[in-house]
Image (tube, rainbow, N blue to C red; front, side, top):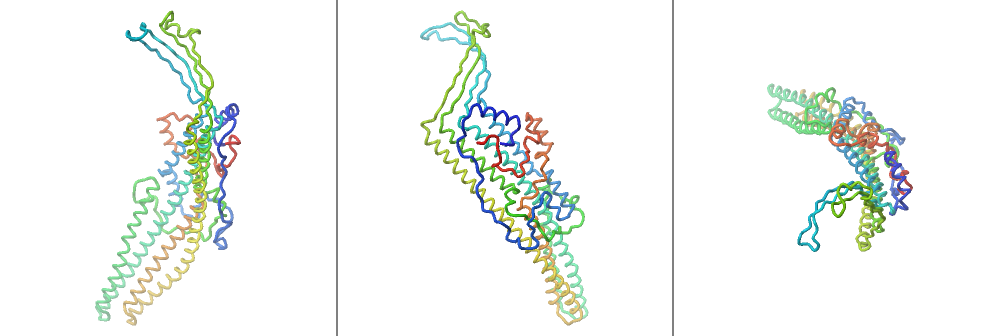
Length: 522
């Protein structure tokens, strides 16, 4: 509860000291989780175990276009805006929960009633008027911490919504980077295919020339055309994938599909990743990954719901009262006497309610809430394990893709030399055209594999940083919901100060549900 607004904290704390005695139900404790001491690839010299700031992890690619794309996505992505508005929803729900802690019913009422009894009644009366005006209130005191637990739960749900926003931001930055790398990789593969087309067109010309001079057969020409058209057929599927990747990037940028010429202009090289990656240690994930924080907040919120359910096993004590004025036109009274002090009407006193005959139903509700809580504890533990797996999977993919690229560089160079030699020998008549075809296909395959692997290296590094939970820090000190959206909401509804960034965007870096709260029991 340490993130409630200051005035709300003071008021809730003061009232809780006056009218409460305990909070039933368990206090949340972070569950034990299985975390490795170090990464499996920690022995590789390319893996660095020191701590690092992953706020702008994409800058390791040193690509201004990528930097600009992520900046645009952060400003305009609609999925991220939805996550931001959900934080406002959770903040409003927290306000509702806080309101339940105070007198639940507070009403001003008034009426003017005309009454004409039936002439056939037991005691015939003449018609008359009754007027009344007054105030009434009913306050269920929080003896068992029912409402405090509800506030605690709502507060954790709110903090969890901020963690969900952070997780959406981590996903967004990684998706933008991945889409950009896919686009550049496909552009490179198309470029390679077209370069090979040019080489193969020359091979067709050579085969035709040798046919004219009688040093080759029509078979060589047809084989050369087969290879040429096969290579040309590789381009349309790549162009389909390129178009789809650009459409996906447009969606992430919050815009309808277009060619992105203005944003993607410039060299179409695949972003080059550094050979090294700083991953810290596995326990860092518990603090950094937003989805782990979100899972913990969900469990903490549900823990408080057990206390809400347990409180129903005990009697509910309330204070009720009303004060007003009443007058009528019966007897010597008249409506004008409404505001005379003698016309005052007061009722007040304590009361209690105890659902003693619903014990079985209430107990089963406690069991239900406890089972759900246990489910969320296991979900939290599972989330931690899955996070470690994601880092390990993508880390080994990053390292082994680099190893593969080194071999492909050598094989591509050898394939290029092989093609040059085969063409030369074919010209001289010492080799048949099948040798040229094999060399051409080998070069195309090696170049395409190398380009695809270079993209895999960069994409794997992106996924490593995503698994590490980097990127959400860029929202610190900034609004979770764009000003244009909050201004529109403020015109439509009186949000008071809840649209101020400080009220829905606390600094929760490193905070967990087990942090100090408003009250020792909270």
